[in-house]
Image (cartoon, rainbow, N blue to C red; front, side, top):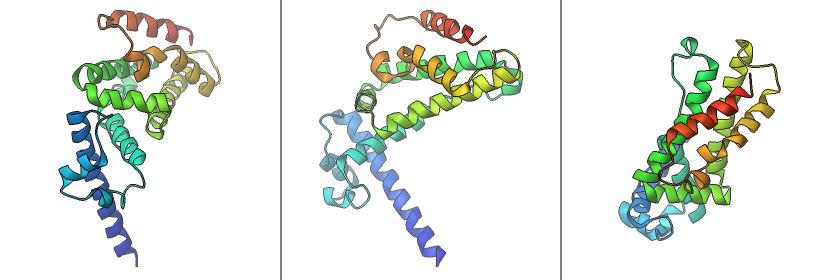
Amino acid sequence: MALPSIASNDHSAAERLRIIRAGTAACRLYGPSKTTVADIARLLGKSPASLYRTFSSKAEIWDAIAADFYESDLCFEPSSAGHLTRATDQLKETMLGHHRLLLQAQQGDPQMYGLIVLTASSNWPSYRQYRNRLHSLVGELIRDGIRTKEFQPTHVHAAASCLCASLVVLWDPRFVGATPPNHCEISALELVSFAVDALR
């Protein structure tokens, strides 16, 4: 009984991924505001109605495209050699790494960047997942820093929320997109260092 269910789930996941990939290509070609479900269906050689057998709405398709972009292009992890690196350095690396990825997307992939700005402005699930993932990672690093006595004991969830809020101009696409193009990373480094020092 389980085998048909597994096969069905695999087929559904594969179809979902095909639609997301085609949707990403269409978004890059036409832009998020001009792309239609018909454009995506045409790239797949399908009818628009067939896409609604996998996604319940156009908004769900767009959110899935954005979620995939967040995961593939905007997912930063600190250095894997965590046992050799101070929590302070990993925390700085994490915030600056997210900032760099957003700047790269803003400059190199403007159509997709426009889509994630929309997700942030509208508070879509894909944006909330991105934000929550960052908050969780920051919380883990703060917990590590408390354990190694780099940071003062504190309420980890509150500290992570405060740190992310104080650095929102570096990781939220709405604010990064509004940053002047001559914004230099040294100012971002100074801002991160100032925020992280508050944990000591």
